[in-house]
Length: 381
Ligand code: ADP
Image (tube, rainbow, N blue to C red):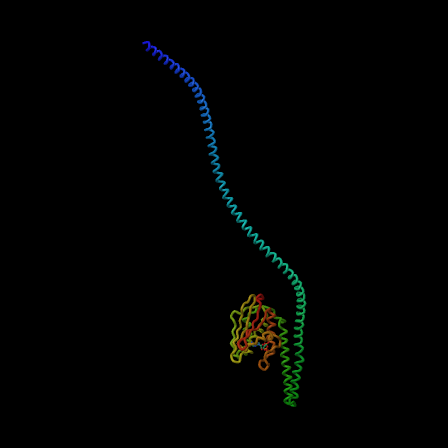
């Protein structure tokens, strides 16, 4: 038993030792637990602090988020207006580029036009010089023209005066010559031989011809000096009157005469215009072709502000080299024995046309046709 007790004592002391150790350990653990509890409380406080901060941060975050949202919205708006501005800028840029291109083009054109302006300026300066020179010449020529015109008017007046006076004064001595030749023929006719009588006949014919020429000269000088004032004149009536005057010659030649239906009414001297048409139609009858009856046409056309009247025939015609000369006074193309006349008709015709402010000319194909044309201004109507 003792050994068992001793062993149990030993075992008890051992358990006691172990218990003391465990107690120690528990004490230590408790201390540690207390320490840990303290730590835990500290940590809990810290966690609480952290939580509080977290809550604060969350609030700030929410605020910030809201602010960010607002800012984002503003940003979107800003972006939209930025995009708009960008588009406007692009458009503006395109426009600016277009303007720049147009400006460059205008620059080029300006440069080109500057060059041509310079050239034009040079030409202008040159033509100014020429103008100044020609103006100086023009002034001189105008002065000369005025002098020549005055001289012409004076000489025309003198010529008309001369022709008029001479025609009257010349006829008196001519009449004396004719009278005394006739007296001589009557008194000495029996005593004269054939040759002497022929001489007297020549002298009588010469005096008669001279008288005719003096009368023609008188008629020529009277154109434009008559008292017949200008008035509306129907050219249809004028042609009718001229044809009436020539009816014997027309019948004798079996001529066919036609006048256009639309002959105008002009302002002029009826007497002179009848004389003009009578001369032209009379010549068409006189210078008819031997192998065909005369066909004569009187017509009128409008050219600008004037009438162009014409008298055409199918007669012997006129060679072109005489187109001008036939209008001169006493100019004839044929011997007196072939065709009667003094060569005054066309000279008088030209004077009548010019007195009416017109021009006269002839066109002809020898052996075929001749057309005399003359103009009459419409403004006088
Ligand atoms: P005249 O008939 O008295 O000779 P004009 O002055 O009337 O004088 O004519 C001048 C010339 O013009 C004429 O001699 C004639 O040779 C020519 N002549 C005029 N009219 C015609 C005509 N219609 N056809 C051909 N020749 C003409």
